[in-house]
Every structure is written in C-alpha cells, then in structure tokens.
Image (cartoon, rainbow, N blue to C red; front, top):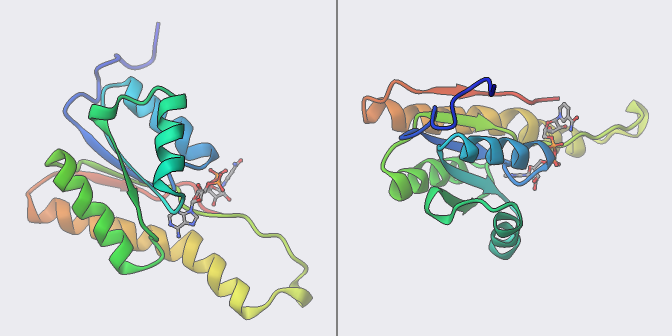
Length: 150
Ligand SMILES: NC(=O)c1ccc[n+]([C@@H]2O[C@H](COP(=O)([O-])OP(=O)(O)OC[C@H]3O[C@@H](n4cnc5c(N)ncnc54)[C@H](O)[C@@H]3O)[C@@H](O)[C@H]2O)c1
C-alpha cells in the first residue's frame, strides 16, 4: 500500500529550484505522481527541460519550466512570479539548486568559495524569501524546505 494517496497533493502548487538535477527530477516525478502542479526551475535550456519532461512523462498541464538563475534575487522572484502566473497559487517551495566541490584548502580560491556559497546557501535564502513573500501577500499558509544543502 502506498504511503500517500495518489491525489494527496491535488490542488497544491510546488516550486522546485534546481529541479532538473539528479535529486530534483526524482522529486518532481513523485510530486506529479501525487497530483501536484509543479513549477520546475533550473539554468538548463528550455529544450533540455522539455525533452526531460517528455522522457519522464511529466503531464504538460501540471508542469511548467522556469529558466532562471536563483543565485540572484531577480531569478528567485521570477520563479515565484511565473509559478503564480502559471497556476495561480503556491503552497510549497523546495530549494534543490546546488553543487558539490571538493578541493584542498590551499588551492581553494575565494572566488570559488563565493560561487559555491551563492549557489548552495544564498539561493535557498532567496528562493525561500521570494516564495514566502508571494505566499504572505496572498494569505497562503505555505512552507519552504531548504534541503538538500552541502
Ligand atoms: N546526490 C546526492 O547524493 C546528494 C546528497 C546530499 C546533498 N546533495 C546536494 O544536493 C544538491 C542537489 O544534488 P543533485 O545530486 O541533484 O545535484 P545536481 O548537480 O544533479 O543538480 C543540481 C541542479 O541545480 C541546477 N543549478 C545550478 N546552478 C543553478 C542556478 N544558479 N539556478 C538554478 N538551478 C541551478 C543544476 O543545473 C542542476 O540541474 C547539491 O547541492 C548536492 O551537492 C546531493
């Protein structure tokens, strides 16, 4: 017996930053299987997202792709705005944009450190803040998850 009913997310809208990544695409598939509407964000091309959506049989009426760089406030705001434009609501924000970078500390540049921190940490803050703002403005009692982060 499945842990959750297939329609347990019916009527709920979820946005997911970094949603075309290894973890993100599995999460997107699971959300769609449970009837959610999903706004998927990444920096990959629209063609790449469309092909992946077809390959994974994501239903086009409940899936929209938002190409945006969520390390920038404008990118995170665009993600929240386009989610609302597409589906008219936003209940859950998931922050999955990130990357791992292992390097001996003596070779680790400050610029690289800043790049990783912007992607793994700041993007989660920006997506959470933009989403929370959109939810509060519309009186939506939603939530945001910052996992996974390195
Ligand atoms: N795979 C694991 O076992 C694991 C375990 C723990 C934590 N993590 C961390 O979780 C995060 C996601 O893991 P993953 O395996 O799915 O990684 P991934 O590299 O497959 O996916 C990350 C996605 O983020 C996207 N992205 C990069 N920069 C972006 C930006 N500026 N704006 C929007 N999207 C952007 C990438 O294009 C990619 O699709 C990473 O930080 C990873 O280090 C992974």
